[in-house]
Length: 200
Image (cartoon, rainbow, N blue to C red):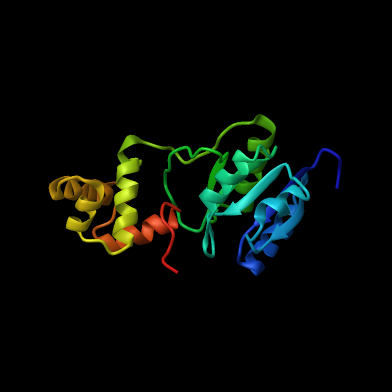
């Protein structure tokens, strides 16, 4: 380890995957994995005990939502960069507050290491290209979450005080943006993107 190495904490509830990733990153010059966390309980305190330059976090951590955890850490004024990883190939996603980069686990270790170095040293944001066509609005995300709770279109309309026709229009837009053909497909993709939590 050198003084100017980028210190990294990996947060992933799949222990074998997290440890393997840690070993791969440690083999790259300029990177130093100082901790691998596989349980997100009391995560903030674990981070504060040894604040890294970069946090590499899975978007899905058991019952926890990686996006929400990242936002909490960001709001705590912890001086670190946060990179979210997804096992799903997201294609494109909008900039998310509190998160410095969003990467797919399908990327090569070389690509991931380059992202880590770029985010830390150049202080830039790295997200797959985002377009209006595939960016869900807050209303659409709310409706997607209600769909995941097995609400009917009528129940969603009553909950949000909008017409069923408006709900149907939103659902059609959700399907188009997520490139799915059913509510089940939308929920599955929403979970993979971290937009909604799976039912426990």
